Image 1: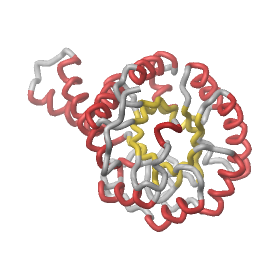
Image 2: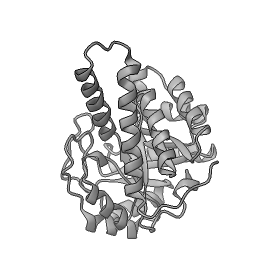
Image 3: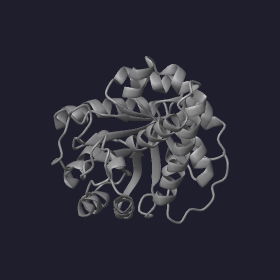
Length: 280
């Protein structure tokens, strides 16, 4: 992960981190990054692991896609609350994880995150954590919560995390793009915290809001629901036009192509002055 985010902090540019549930998501995320000629983060959430029943098969597919891509692709375990799952991910070769203990009291969040960081760093794994619970995930809706800059700086110093997800006005699983971010707070957090800042719930933020967030200091922008809306919408459209279809390849292919386009567009949005990247 460091090679992908190096130089981005403070540059006014960001990187897209996209959640994959199906193999079609993962294929589209990598293809979209190749179309944009920009690096990308391919994320597998704990909820996606629960959907598949285990991490290993889907992780193997994502790691293979990353290894064969023409642009840098990092496979990242997202929103892991289960420490055993983090250990499994590291054993499988995933070198970027998010440990989510934000719902715990501050002292417990610090202690558990620090322990995860120590284990992961020993294995060469990058760790993101969260401070200030972000609403909309599994009913944990907390729209008024904001991350305090001083507390964020102390948290990073105490835990040694490599990136910090902050609560600045976004919410998970939004189906409309009308979230209003606190740009002034993002700027204060970026000045106080020495590691990259991460925006979760980005699907609910309009494009101009994402541009401003990156300019103010957000480095990693997580996108999930937007891809699901695009995929499902295209599948519905295809099935409505061709009611005789039963072969899933015939309706999932257009959906995958639509996600590919959305990924490329989002990556270009976050990196307004991109320069081509070499293969790896």
